[in-house]
Amino acid sequence: MATIEQKGMYRTFPRSGKDVSFTHYCPGCGHGIINKLIAEACAELGLQDRTIFVDPVGCGVFTYYYWDAAHISAAHGRASAAATGACRARPDAVTIAYQGDGDLGAIGFNNAFQAASRGERFGCIFVNNSLYGMTGGQMAPTTLDGETTTTTPFGRDPALTGHPLHVCEVFSQLKAPVYIARVSVADTRRIMQAKQAIRKVFEIERDGRGYALLEILAPCPTNFKMSPDKAAAFCMNEMEKEFPLGVFRDETREPLAVRPVPRAASCRELFAEKDAVPAAADDPAFPERRFKFAGYGGQGILSLGLCIAEAARLERRHTLWFPSYGPEQRGGSANCSVVVSGTPIGSPTVEHPDVLVCMNRPAYERFVGDVKKGGTVVVDETVPVEVQPPEGVSLVRWPAIRMAEEFGVPKAANTMMLAALKKFKLTGLSDASLEEALVASFRKKPELGEKNRELLRRAESGARS
Amino acid sequence: MVIVDKDNCKGCGRCVAACPKKCLEIGEELNSMGIKSVKYKGEGCVSCGICFYNCPEPYALRIEK
Image (cartoon, rainbow over all chains, first blue to last red; front, side, top):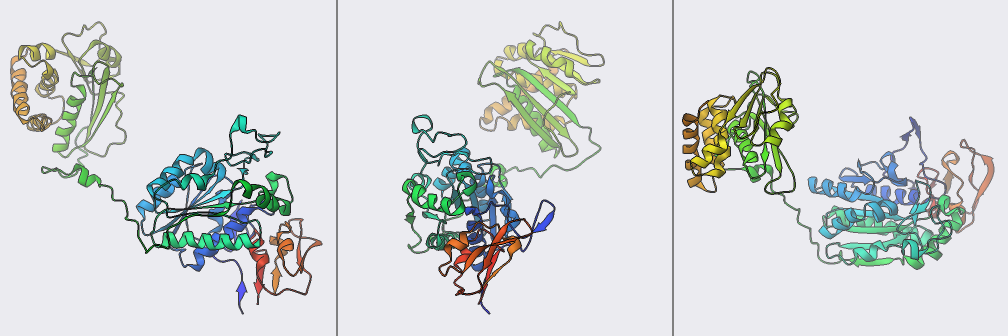
């Protein structure tokens, strides 16, 4: 016995803690009709096990209760962004974003538009009912000129709020989409056309052809403040004047062209080096050390922190380097935090350092009070010490800037500071690793690497402690 | 023939308007949601399925041929 019945949906919907088999949609809602067509197309094409639906915020939010396939719920307007991630992570999946006109047309427009421009491999089913439904019938970008909504009680005035946004027409300016169409679910003929178009979107995504946009005009009897039949008539008689139905682009008649899956470089590729060091090894016996380096931008503060982190990496310690600086390339204040640990590190920020290195007065006065008891502050000797470190914190005044000038390399003050850290054994890292990291930091200018190694050794032996 | 599950019907009347044979109507009886739901007049259905596709609810109507 042949039957016509719902396919592709769960039999019951566990909303509000109880199983029901009716939707949350208002009587006569276009979403309900569209939801049924989508579930049917997905099931009839045998794609339920391959489909990822990206659900919107808006009246369509509960589709995960209905469609029997995988779901991701996106933040308001972000369904196309989430779908981009989904289709890139799972190029074998059929990814379908379901969005409304408030969601896609307003806050999420750029997300959707850029995804279409990139030709992402997902289908966007865009329900246009000319207003924000779920929030109470406010004006949306798609509201018709003169249409009454709760925020346009005298009708939409184009002089005040502009004209309706034609999403299909705008997206048709883009090169990448393979299919763009507008259909409606206002009457039987239109529903059958919508059914075919929805099926087509699934086929496009099944075959990996690229981006498809299907706009569906839908009645919202509740917010139109009309009976379901009058709301459907409004869709046909008023909305279609502004939003004509039709196919704006259909490249699916072309020979099957599978859109290449975008290939992003992996972290392994990006960070692979000839001298690649194996990943950090756990060593709970190694005491965690937290460092803060601070000074003016241009004093090599960030590089000095990076050098410590690199030395830690060479020793297969867990390490994080975290810079903080203003918009200036030179002269602004800059600092960085470095954590070196024997176990994985939770946060890269350092509020209470074991070792604080300061190249100037503002940095010293800002951070000296934060140093942990038992810790050490290394400060350039040019910095006047009017503020004393907290009790139990040792202070080293070190002539980094003067030595760098005496050696004729004023820019090497940070290397001079490294000499202090090395000399006083403040890093917990070996001398060899510190030197290797210093040389490695000049790998683009190898002659400077060896020069700095020499400066480092001279500073260590020459300076008074 | 159309089969109505009246407890899943919200009485919107879209099927009534769409039925080419005019064999559906909104009944007087209230369903479990307190709604006057659709009912089959008892004759005329040709099992075309138009009511099913016009209905926003997945399980209010089905056609058994």
